[in-house]
Length: 317
Image (cartoon, rainbow, N blue to C red; front, top):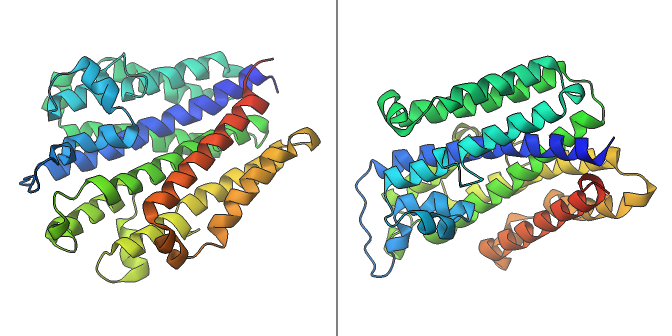
């Protein structure tokens, strides 16, 4: 497969997944912001709920270059509609559709039609329409478009190299997002250390679980109160949790085993090493090392793996 084609397929999948992840994060933030909120400790104004999507996505600096005030409207405009923010939902859907158009011969007609219709619908949205129809309703629409695209892909596409690059892009993006949102909750969401174990803490951990569709799974597995330790276990080590780091690395490692040849076995080895750490990891060891330190190490590793994939498979020679 040509590097250019692989590149478009990989980033098409990443942009669709990123749009969904952004919608999930904004939906949870929107619901949390409806509750009374007060920063108790001086100097923690940055922990205001609407700062969370910016911190999680690493876009706080870019936001303040365009907007002077942190508010629900400004964050929603920036992360949904801003054409200057390459990670906004608008830009992600546009980029995914452009990638699909560039490689129409490598995907099915149903996949292209799905992305094209999603982009055409997205173009008519402005802030007033989103507000009038309901913020949560719009974000649910984004999530459902992503679900629909994955379903169409799974149901219509030949299991060839093109399919594997799409799957690879999806799970690289998903693993990165899960690690980021878990790390941000652990470090920035609580307004006061005194709230640990309290109602605010409980609601924030449950909100995190809902943002990765893990609330029902947590209840089914643990049948107990939500604790940070068990949330970390669910979202890091559980292979049967679709958005966990372990589950994502299962797909990434399996896909790279198919794509790699003798000249690219180092990428497979790096992915296998990261996969093994999750497969044989233990919650006690993660807590002992420090959840923040563990997640930073994972983010560095997944970023390095993404760079290797980009160099070996995606950059046109």
